[in-house]
Image (cartoon, rainbow, N blue to C red):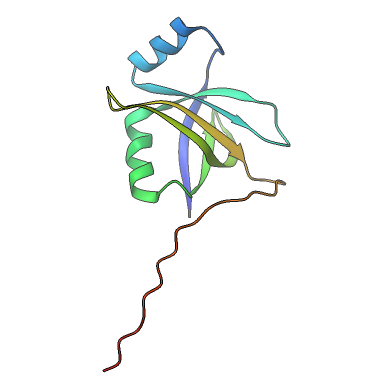
Length: 113
């Protein structure tokens, strides 16, 4: 399942910059992979949390970064458990990369009638 997530480029680095990003309702993130350079981005935190609850962590996300679309999976999520907020997301580009993912399988037996 592919899900579009809108993002914008951001300045990398300083703690004060990250704090202002979070104060404005965004979560800092980064997207990297074999075919692209690491790009720091910001994603609207509440919208992303809703998308994540609906589609799950194993989803292939289409990151729309100012018109440039990149297909990526979540490599790492960081949460502030006290404030219950998303603090950082690492996305890994899937195009041209061999990826290994863990899946939970639920096998149900068919009941005889």
